[in-house]
Length: 146
Image 1: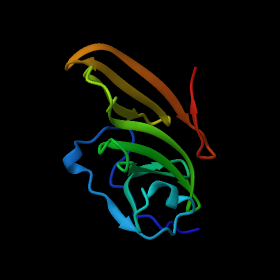
Image 2: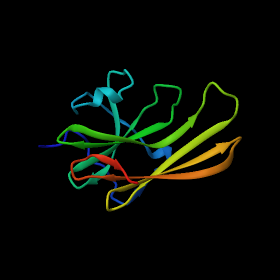
Image 3: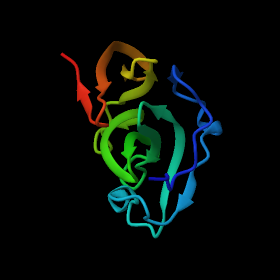
Image 4: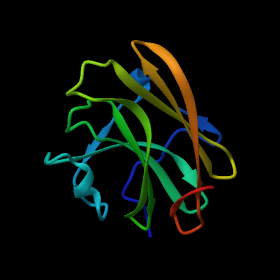
């Protein structure tokens, strides 16, 4: 089956790109499951990264809530979204003045392992850094590693 998505220009390994370089492509909802990631807009926005085995890896912005910088990594197989993982962006508690903030970024290696690094800050000062590890499976599923 021919992909309905544009081909990514990158190859593995890959890491978070400068925000200025991430230019989202707008398309209709030809990819099955894409309506869920449109924030109620009439188009599906995505940024093609690369392939891992048979899965296409794309970033989608989930900027419809309190946060305008949140990217999810989606795996797409046979023009259908298989799985997702939150991989990049900024989180904070919009109702509090405590200045807690989390900044996440990602790396994906040639073996399909995703590492999401989150820097937990208070008042701009790093408190701790956590790493979450995932594996992209042959069927496109993204599984958190223990």
